[in-house]
Image (tube, rainbow, N blue to C red):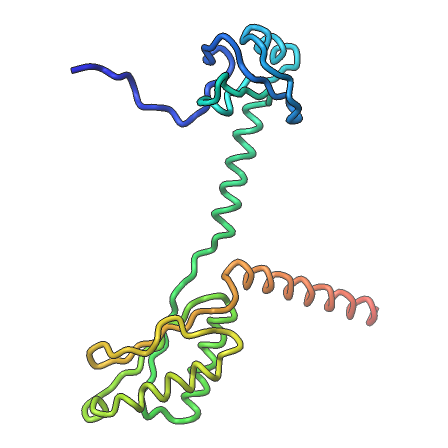
Length: 204
């Protein structure tokens, strides 16, 4: 069996690990230096107290850039972490209703749906049928349509009402993304803090 060596590293080759006779060199600020021998490129990196990093290995000749590789890796990791944080996962909340719900209960449940959508979460609305109610699916679909219309400014019907055994289910998605909702909430909190501070100054 032929040994093809260890696993391929995703890390770029740097400094003495770049084993080609010449490279297309890019300066630390993105300026094109041109094609130079690997010896000269390494010498320039040493003089500038920077690393020579291969950024396009498949180019002919390979493209290398002068940079502080440690700092570059750190900044890349921070950017990736920030991107993950901003992705803020959408959570699916669930609300259960009965087809013959009384007006007060309906308003309470609708309030929950409004709150979830404002926070950027999806809402799965389940109508639970019991006994004879199962023969009246139109009661459920009418209630779901009414709810969707009542919250139309905040959300849209992502999944149309469908029967699932004894239940009828509909999913409402928020117009606002989770990250936007979080940012708005933080901004509103900051505004409230400013208002409180201003009131304290006026009272003082």
